[in-house]
Length: 348
Image (cartoon, rainbow, N blue to C red; front, side, top):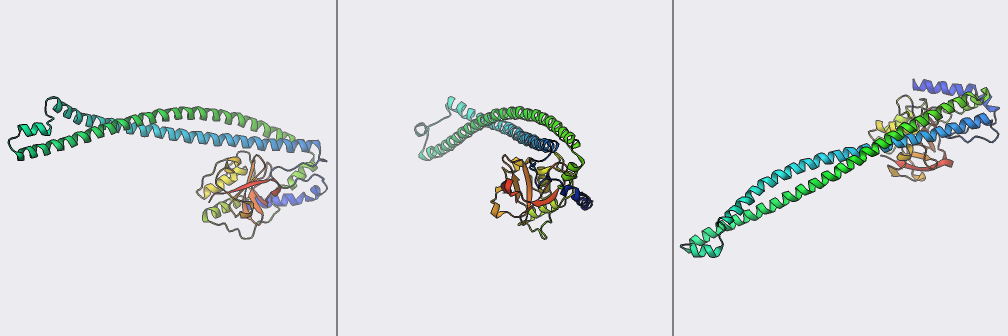
C-alpha cells in the first residue's frame, strides 16, 4: 500500500511537472523551502505561515519532552519515598530489637550484675573460678558492645531514611508542580499550533492553480535511494529499514505513526522498532545519543538542521537521508540539506 501511495505521489508530480516548469518559484527540497523574491505575496504568506507552524510544532513537542522528564522524576521520587519508608520500618524494628538487649545490660549493671575483674578476684574461691567467671563477663561485655553498636546503626539508618523521605516528598511535590506547568504549556502550544495550521491551510486555498501545482511538484520522491543500505549494527539497520518502509506516508504535525509522521515522529518511531527509545522532539534528539561528525556519518545516524534545531532526518548513506519534510509532502528520500546542517547523533 505504501509503495502504491508513493507511486501515486510521483506520478502526480510528473503530471504537473510541465506546469511547474513555467513557474519561476518552484520550491527547493528541504523542510523549510526558501521563497524566491519574485514569488507572489500569497505564496510568500503560505510558506511563512507553514514555517511558523513547523516551529510551533517543535515547541509543542519540546513541552511534551519536558512533561515526560517531569513524570520520570516524579516516578523516581515516589519510588524513593517507598524505599525510604521500607528502610524506616526495618530500622525501627532493629531499634526495638537491640534496645531491649541494651536495656537488659543496663538493668544488669544497675542491679550489680556488671562485675569487673577485681571484684571477681576478691569474691572467687580459686584462680580457675576467677578465670572462668572473667571469661563469661568478657563475652557478655562483647555482646553488650555489639548491641550498642547495632542500636546506634539502626538509629542512624532510621534518621537517614527519614531524611530521604523528606527529600523524596519535596522532589515529588516539585515534580508534580512541574508536570502541571508542562501540561498547561502543552495545551497552550497545541492551541497555537492548531490555529497556525488552520491559517496555513487557508493560505494554501488562496494560492493560484499554478502556485498549487508548483507546490505539489516539489512533493513526493525524486531522488533514488542508495541501492544497498548497510548500517553498522543490527539496531541501526532495523531503524533504517523501518524508516524506509514508511516512504509515501504523509507528513502530519505531531504525528508519530504508523500512518503519518512529522520529522521527529518518523525517527522516534523507527528507533522504537529497533527497541531504542528516543526523545520525541528533534531538538531533544539532537541533545542525546553520541555526537558524530559530518565525515563519520553512517546509515542510521540522525542528521539535524537549523539553529535552533527544528528538523531531523535519518542518514542512509551516499549523502542522502530519509525524512518527513513538511506539510503536504510525504516521507521520502532526499539529499542531505548541507546548507542547513547543524549536527548528527548516533543511537546504536
